Structures are given as structure tokens and as C-alpha cells.
Length: 403
Image 1 (tube, rainbow, N blue to C red):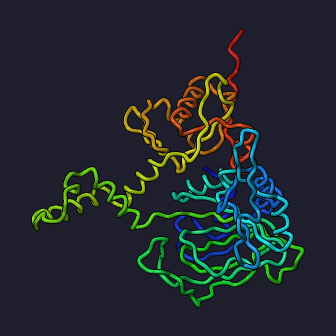
Image 2 (image 1 turned 180 degrees about the vertical axis):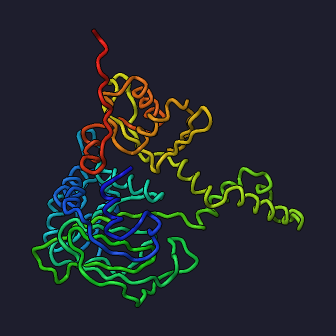
Image 3 (image 1 turned 30 degrees about the vertical axis):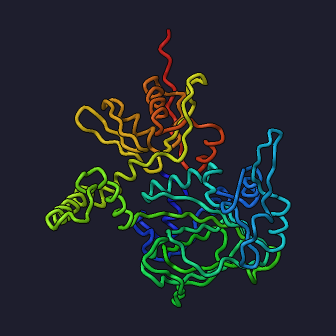
């Protein structure tokens, strides 16, 4: 999938592919001035908050550096069937923002088609699960206290400005569940300055950072989005091996009283298991076996879809073997005749594919991929997430053969 955001992030940070994610702090500027507003605006964010059923901690608010209790900005509405829904109290949210506060909405990609497609594109690019959080700060407001994240972050300033300080790590590759606590900030300041609309910054896992609008004026604002990459580690690989070991009877027997010979056999078997599922194969199986987070089904009574797009979390593989083509992705493994290969590569490209000029074989193939959960029919709303960001594929209408 070729997405404008991915292309411009690489250019801004001077990267040649995703290999630099997590390697070092980097900062740059998008060369496309229209891209930030295309991704998200403050009013669009507030409109999304207004229309959604939200609860804490997905929606959080802060003032003077401290988190505000959810009861101050969330309300429970009860409909005529006595069903309760937690929603944002927009008037209260407005008072918090106008008083110099910050609103944070996690996993915005679940609500907004533009950020959903952007996260999918970044996931295909990086090979890691990606999500988006939005931060709207108004006036003179303090940010979060100096902290580090347990995932890699690419921050894009969408509008307004915000001052940042980024420091190096105080513990190499810290994790959420770790062998020791990581509470002492590093004294190594890597960068201190202000991000403005169009600026991009990459903060690796474990790097300390803080952001604020103090001193920026009471009439301004800041909106930025962070794309978080949850990278796999040696620990997650070992956890995978632990689960894989359950299929081997030798690992299901008691260890106590087994004797040295049995213990030695277990050590040898563990080495064989690790060799059979080396880290590269583990990552391949993880990506191919991850089902889409969401998927729209094919309802045949509604007619054939006008357009489709792949919805797998990672790019599916399409490999030819003799007279067959094997597709792996989205938790599925499918086999087709080689005649289907051109259509498969188009439909699984990540680009929106318009079907109104396609032949019956392509339409049938699209329907099968939708049924299997690798693609979904596009609506006007979901199609909007691609508009101007991912080039669509359009099948030309076949010339009429009638006399």
C-alpha cells in the first residue's frame, strides 16, 4: 500500500524504510503542507468525541499537568429502553479546554476512517500493530510529566504548536512488564524546542519526554497525533515458544522428580522447538495469523459491492507454487489457480479497488476475499479514508460486443 503519510514521514525523517523505527530519536518536517489538516482537525476531533460512546481511560482530560476525574467530563445517558451509555459532556469538555486543558482520545483509528487507513498503512509498512492517539490542548496548559512509553512513537503536529523536551533512555529497552522499575529520568537532553503544524518526531521506546503549552499564549492551541508501534521483542518470542510447547507432550509432564535424564531431554527439546520456530518464522506466523480488527461482511441480498479494499492488519503474502497461488494473511491460508494471481495482487494491494468495470471473475474473487475476511466492501464513509491519500485502482469498463 502506497500511502501519502508513510511516504512523507520517511522523507521528513530521512528514512529509507521502517528499519529506523526504534533506532534513534529523529525529527523533521512534512513537505506536503496540506497533509496535516487532511488527517485531522480540532473541530473534527471534537465532532468524533460528540458522536461516540466513550468511557475513561479512552477519553481523558488534564489540567495543570494533573488528570481530571472522569465524572467531570463524562455523563451517562439513559434511553427510553433504560439502556445507559457513557458519553462526553461536551459543555463540560468545552469548559475544561477553554480553561487551559487537554483532551486525549486513544485509539482514534477505531472511530475515524482516515486514521484507520493511515494506521493500516503504517502497520503494513512497519510489520507492527499500529494505533493512533489524538491530543488537543488549548491555551496555557501544562502537559504530561516527564515520562517514557513502552512502544515506539511517531508524533505528527497537525495544528497549533507545542513545546517538547526529549531525553535519552535511562534503561536500555525497558518494557511494561520488566525485571526492574524504570523511574529515574535520564539527564541526557537530546532536543528541546517547539513543534509546529507539519513537524514530525520519532521517539523510541524508553526515551523520556514531556510536552507543554506553558508560555505559548492563552489564545492558541495544539493538536497532535501519535502513532504507536507495539514491536515484538525477545520476551514475546519466548512467550510464543511457551504456548507452542503446549502441543508437545514432553513439556506437559511434571518437572519435579523427573530426573536428570528427563531434564536433559527437555533442554534438548526446547532447543529444537526454538530452532523450528526461530524469531523470523515467529514474526511471519504472527503477521499472517493476525485477524483483522474489524471487517464488514458480504450480504449478497444487498448486491455486489461497488468497491473493495484489503483490511488485514499486515500485508498478505501472494506466492506462486507451480499451478497454484497461495495467499496468507488475516488468519487465513487460501489456495487459488494461477489464473487468479493478477486479480489477487490488485485486490490485496491495500488500495481501494473500484469494481464497476471489472469482469465477473474479478467480482467473484472480490466476493470470496470478503467472505474470508481479507477484504471488505467500501462505503462512502470508509472510502473517504483513502481519498487523496491512497490512489484507487479502477477496472476499465469492457467494450460492448453487441452488434
